[in-house]
Image (cartoon, rainbow, N blue to C red; front, top):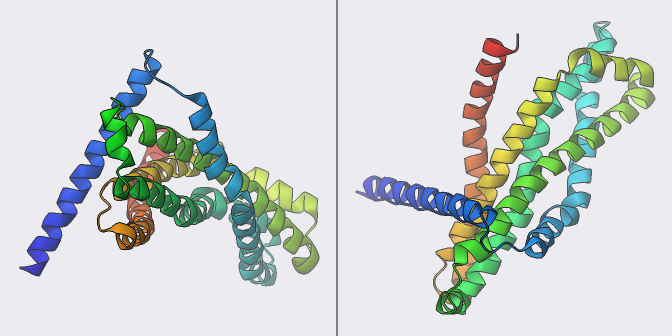
Length: 263
């Protein structure tokens, strides 16, 4: 019985999040057709989500690139394959690690903040006040956060790739004994544009997932301050789980597309 109720609750939650996503798209189209659109609100959210996350993303990207070179550099050197270090690191970063790690960092910082902010508004009946003033909460609250998270996660993933390559190159030069030219040439030889675009596409999808789950958890908050805390925690956990699950299907789909049309 517990399993049945759990599955039922999961399906209902996925359905509600899908409806919220579709409402977000509807109100976005409505805004583009001449409805209410606030660039200031969007840019404020982009600053809070993207600019304020730069330091965390920089540390994550730099350390990941450096650790990758440490892990594979010495083994490649023993096999006489040092010239492949830069290319292998760049492929790992562009395809998987940059979008995944950036999304997890953003989910922990931004997803929780979105859920807490909207959850507090729900508890204090500010969302009811918006509806009383004929303002749709999805239009006013979700749309700017959704697109800010989606756009900035795309940009932050590019930043993570660059910082990761910088960290990897420094370690490769000072510990593995590679030259900067050899590291760069390896990247240019092995890394293809479809590898970068595949990772950036993943990041865009992950951004949409983080924003949708954070807003949904905020809207469904109940039980005062304790409920806000539960929604915040749940938003982070569910976002990370969804990112890891969806990543598999995106990876398979992108690989199949590249094999069928780009090779």
